[in-house]
Image 1 (tube, rainbow, N blue to C red):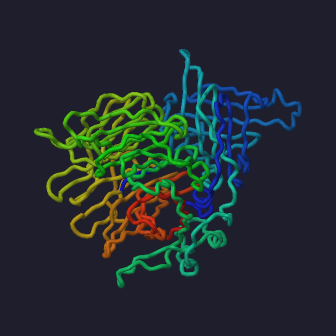
Image 2 (image 1 turned 180 degrees about the vertical axis):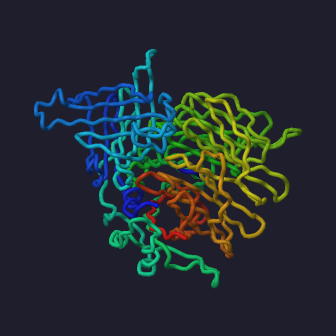
Image 3 (image 1 turned 60 degrees about the vertical axis):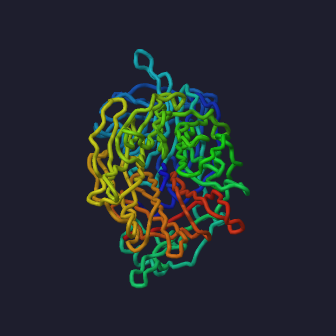
Length: 617
């Protein structure tokens, strides 16, 4: 849940964000049930379980009264020890009694007592069930016969027992499906001391009073002491600088993932898939597209894989964007030909980034340069939007294309808007959410939002979300697990630039007024945003100092953007240029390019994990 370019308990935050895990894959799983759980979970009780028919378990699947899918999984008929047998039930249902389709179902509540407008979810077994719950699930594959019987089904889910995010259960079920399942071992302690973390000066005592007044629910001082560390800075308007002592941040030692001693690497993009694999794409100064991944939480990355080996002679205005969903890695970028013409290229990987398909030109508009692509995917649906330069009587405009077969083929490009550009998009439940900049004249631009119901073939009227501000550009979008929409952008390019934020909690029908989240005295730019769960938001941006150096900052909100923490400097011993941030239920990851101290004429791609203990304003 990333975007690239530029009140929960303390224990819950610890479990969700501070636990790092190692992943292994079960290949070619046909029928399988898997789950892992927190030690405090009422249903899972800290267990990690995988069962298949070959283990003696029967998988009974049926439709349920809400047009959903239900499972009964048991070894009762095959376990000779009656008192040792095990069983579980799973229920999935979409809103409005609609049959399940491939897509994300957020804000689920206990089946079958959910409101008709909400998805239903229930996981329990062995004599245990919830009186209430929250969570979400992703249907990755579903096929029915002519009578409506389920032939193939694949889904991943997250359930919070009794609405407590400390009591989590994450699992996967497969029925006659080749959709891969990623198994997550039991999480180890978030206080593990064997990880290579950079820890700054401790300022815990200065912050205790702030934490104790109720800025976070269920404050537990002993837990705070275990993982608190500094690297935090609060704006001191009197001395016009950031001062230490407001909040905490831990960051792993940066990993050089490009490892290209003779090349200049940049235009990096990051995505973390459902299984937790960290995927990073970038371009080097010869125009070659490269890719690397980590499956151990960001501590080891594979050697770079060449996704497109054709060099490009033009280095400016090249962009890379990527997304990893449902077992596919989708990458799009701007490619310049020898005559200076720019097109949008696309490539995909179906084997975890080991190989990539032959690049496909998806713009291909004669005489018009295309650049700044943005990509999103959900199930079989892949969308790409980009900016086209004007030519002759044709003004600058935004075009897009759609694939309905996981990116194997795309429809011909279509014009979306005759606006300036910087398009950004996200896909959720077959709705395509688009942000873009509309240029009205010199230093006069607005940010607009629109929603495309792809299968309903309807599009909402453009909604201006930037308010009365006129000097705005290049918005970035993120949608959390329950469907809240967030956007950030840069404003006031003539004077001191700042980062602004808006949110929508009703599917994009309305947005809040823009909120400034950066320090007003600084020249802030290049925001990146990611969100997870129900309202956990993380935003990074850069500032440019008077001496020309740059620093990167991060802020957090745990209440859907109602309030944000004080900005924290990301304490990396370089001229930091963090350009992208991504999240997974167990981590926050950042990626950037920077100049190594021993060679200022090149740039490498770096990655680090972050842990935060934010103080909220």
